[in-house]
Length: 116
Image 1 (tube, rainbow, N blue to C red):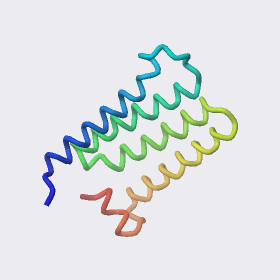
Image 2 (cartoon, rainbow, N blue to C red):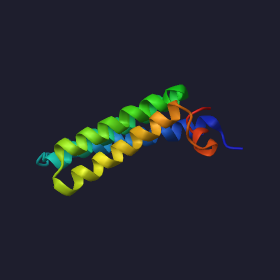
Image 3 (cartoon, one colour):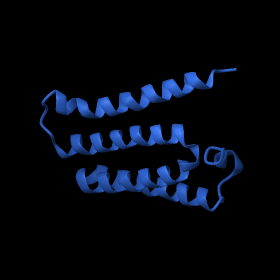
Image 4 (spheres, rainbow, N blue to C red):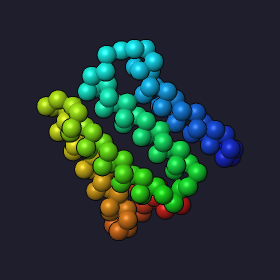
């Protein structure tokens, strides 16, 4: 059986890696385009959301819903034509999954990820 503390440490390392990866264009003094800003915002919020879910698993549905909103809005507002609609659709799918998880209308094998 795996050690729970080890999984939490690996989760923290993954979240910090995502946050640092999002901030590297700023540290490397690259030109900040809308693509770079959108990617950085999404990666930072996914890293922070992962940290929140690690320490408070009951917030999974709320964080998932918020991430869907952020991905849809940031993708639609900051990216160019084909990609903005793709990320908006992905965000809407994530929001739909979160709402269905709140209503407990998902199959049991998917609901177990939201209710521990």
